[in-house]
View 1 (tube, rainbow, N blue to C red):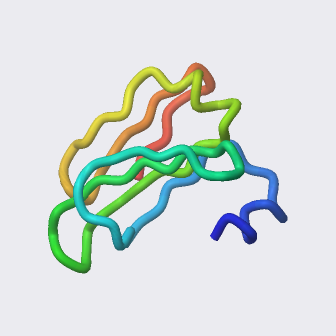
View 2: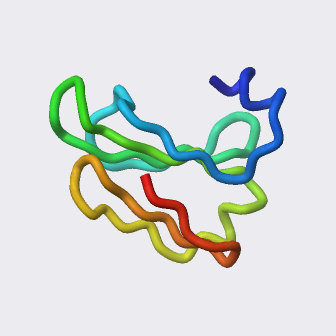
Length: 80
């Protein structure tokens, strides 16, 4: 996925059907961040990829339910 993202211009990306359980965020090798949450096995887990320089502008990540989340930045909001 990281290789595919390098070819496109993006700041924030919402992801569905993420295969990682639990709630966590991680800094990737390319300095971007990956945040995910969800407990149901095999479905409904979501996540966000946030470009590294935008991550400092994130002031809220809200889990509405397992399939809906909201991330707020100084640049606006993104629902997934």
